[in-house]
Length: 166
Length: 408
Image 1 (cartoon, helix red, strand yellow):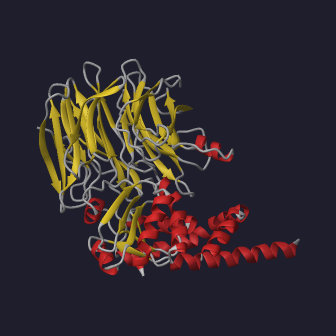
Image 2: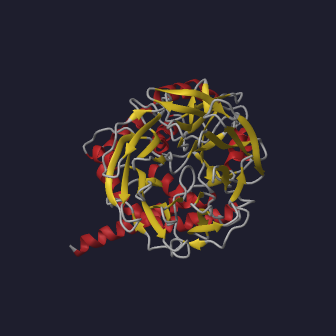
């Protein structure tokens, strides 16, 4: 019995270390008024997906598994997730990402509280509803979508565009 | 690659118990992970977080303006005797600084009792994502001190009780309504689906010494939009909220809360047919004119008719539905006095946020538009208030805290 308890304790400790190590390796860049341009520059000549979410948004949670599955299946397609929570909420954002794991995608979060200004750099007609996703083709022409995505049309987009993503 | 993916999928499906164990472990590990992450935030953004701007305000019967807002990690109340030109030193409502729900449609709320009591509600987030509890405190000595904080709802599960709304009827009974996920969670236990969340409420007959409830107003509300409450002459309260009509239409619904806990029939209030699973973070506002007509503002995003809208709600339809503001208009609020209606909202022009307003002197038929203020920093949602038949707009901005502007 004691032996078993010890084993469980060790397992718990090991997992805690692993989880903390993982948390420290979720790199989250601050998304400021220059970031949209930087993201376009980073993926110049390649298609990419950009999706805005928040820890307070329930449909966003459901979408994390979709990103994980798509990233596994189409590893060459860049997926960029931006949390719109404020800088004070970074702990909550990290905990959310650990819990609902969207896979090895790129992470940003809003760097300041002036959210209208940040949203304006992305899209003037976006009023802050989430999830809000942009599918950029190779020329960076965007298709915008508000709300939870359906897997089939998104996957079709990935099929069509992932050849150009490499 | 495909085969591997299928195998992983199978593995995932056979692992619910492991995930449950992992969940428990994560709870244990979370504090250390959060500390690391918090440390990270400081180094990346270069400054500590400033208090959230979420704030609401109300005039009492004597014309004193009261604001509920955040200060130094506390929920605080400030007082102004000159319609917002100068403010008293804030008085803390909760003795201990603690996190409160912020962002989107979450902010401290305030209502005034029949004898000038100050009632404040807010949401405290709990450990699990999306969970929270609605807290309440009152002052019976003109804001000099506040009662110990109490939880409004009887249900103590660690689930969603969030997006509190408060109002007081003419009899002095306090109504607090909120978004509640107990029915969705009960359905999930039975492996059943559930659209959205539910709206519950509680009533206080003793000026906030205690609450009774929890009364269900409606199932299938949207999950994170504020609820509009409007006290009626007969002691009941009208509520307007973003609903999820089958299958996923996020238009608005209207229903009556009664003091005895019976909920009136739900009726559809807006008819934009916005079919989407989304968090608009954009709840409606409701007011009533001298003739008893209901006026509302709301947000919708159907393909060809996207934005903020005003209309008069009548049985089965909306009269005089019209767009409010330009392409970036958001977070409108409204108030009515007599047959005069005032709307306020904000618009971002690429550099600055503009506080704009529309006023109608004839119950919503004709309007004139004004710009009230401009700010180059962050700002909260505006709120329209009435004092002695005149409109004022309250707008908490980073550069001018608790800004209050009279309408022309």
